[in-house]
Amino acid sequence: MNQNSSERTWPTVHLRHGEADRIQAGHPWIYSRNISKITHDPSDGAVVQVRDHRRRFLGLGFYHSGSKLQVRLISRSKVSVDTEFFRQRIQTALDWRQRHLGSRACYRLVNSESDGLSGLVVDRYGDVLVVQTSSFGMDQRLDMIVEALREVVDPLAILERNNSTGRKMEGLPERHSVLYSKEGSDVGSKVGVEMNTLSWEIDVEQGHKTAVYLDQYENYQRVADLAARMDAPRVLDCFTFMGGFALHCAKEGASSVIAIDQSEEALQTAAASAERNGLADKCEWVHGNVFDWLKQQTSRSDEGEKAALFDLIILDPPSFTRNRSSIPDALRGYKEIHLRAMRLLKPDGVLVTFCCSHHIDALTFEGTVLSAASDNRCVLRRVETYGQPVDHPIVPTIPESEYLKGFAYQRMEL
Image 1: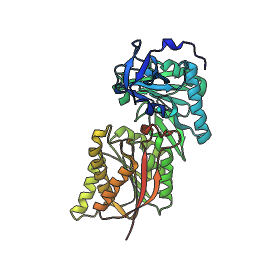
Image 2 (image 1 turned 135 degrees about the horizontal axis):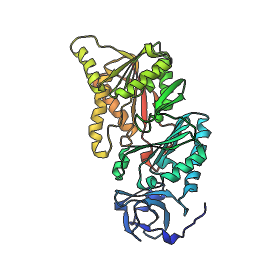
Image 3 (image 1 turned 90 degrees about the vertical axis):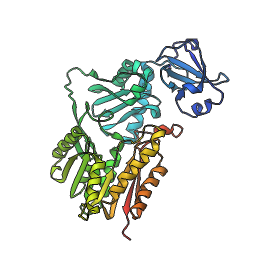
Image 4 (image 1 turned 60 degrees about the vertical axis):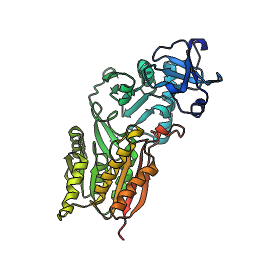
């Protein structure tokens, strides 16, 4: 990549003494507290060069004066941040996915920091791409990103679903729009794709994140494989969203599935997918609060009534914590749902549980599950461990890139 502008045109961000080690190790985030001085008064979104306290060059990044996260590094070399820059980064990301995922139709094409493009997420649903820009600098260069995506992927359409909390922190407005549509194509809000053994119709204008949770793609099938090894299990899927775990388990031999979520729109999409795959007779979709539903079911046994028991229970809640200060409340929430869920689990049954907050590590999360088991006087045997798929890569020196963890436990009959 050619450098079209001289180094002097880049304003310089100088780091405080002792602040460079984390950046040199690979972390791209520079906070205001890390900075000693800034030269040439850069405009928001501008490319700046970052140097340590000895003036050694560390990389280039996007600057934003109004954010606590003032610089996001995007290159460790002196390059021109133009359409060709994005084309090369996106091509590298695509090559990685194709090498490891083959011809899979749905995957995360660009995963922000772990693909060297902090503040950019691109998800692929067949021939449709959905983009999110959560940093000021990336948002300013959306036209370059769209052009690069057209060159590398040649999609039918590129949409933006820019409603993330990260944008609010950057002072960016919410936007939903069609960024590109190939001439002659008729792409609506519903996109039909194949996911594992199921046919899905995904509404790319609704739902969470860019539409669905692609980070659970492989775990959907792994949990369904557990169900297939059981004898026509009765399944409870909590926080089902669009029915990912519920439908996969129904497909792989569950006798019945009860799936619960607060989003009526998501449940309508799940029900339509059940019809599409011939699974409607196995699935019951419950619109409601999972905590309230579990409390109601377990209260029956407290009052001497017979509670419905399940062979397989799946807990896949949204993140309970957005920052470190809320970790204690989050852990209490996790313990509560596990206490309730275990009381509905048959002896020898399996509990599958996930946590998607990077603030809570796997050891702490498992400790909360085991504490709930102890309070229920039951012993759990771990049978599987889950994490992120290859299209959500983890960079160990960026702890925030590792967030999804999960376990499957058998309730031992002793």
